[in-house]
Length: 63
Image 1 (tube, helix red, strand yellow):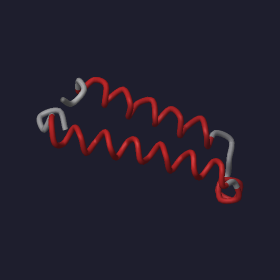
Image 2: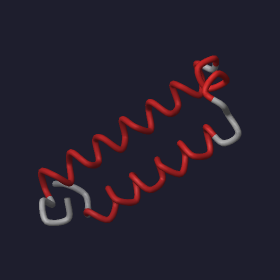
Image 3: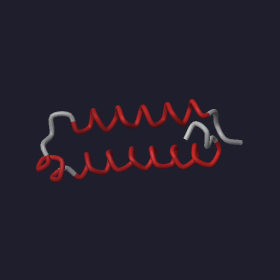
Image 4: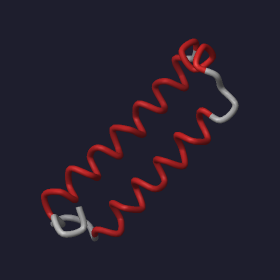
């Protein structure tokens, strides 16, 4: 059974905040030079994508 739609929206919001925190103060060159930061940001985008895909399937009105 899918989670409540608000939980997916909270996941998206938290991931956006995590991305913002991870790249704060970095320019493109420093971002590209840091595998740790790039991996972290990529994982957060995966979480966002999974949440959006689930909302599209189970909560099309909210999507």
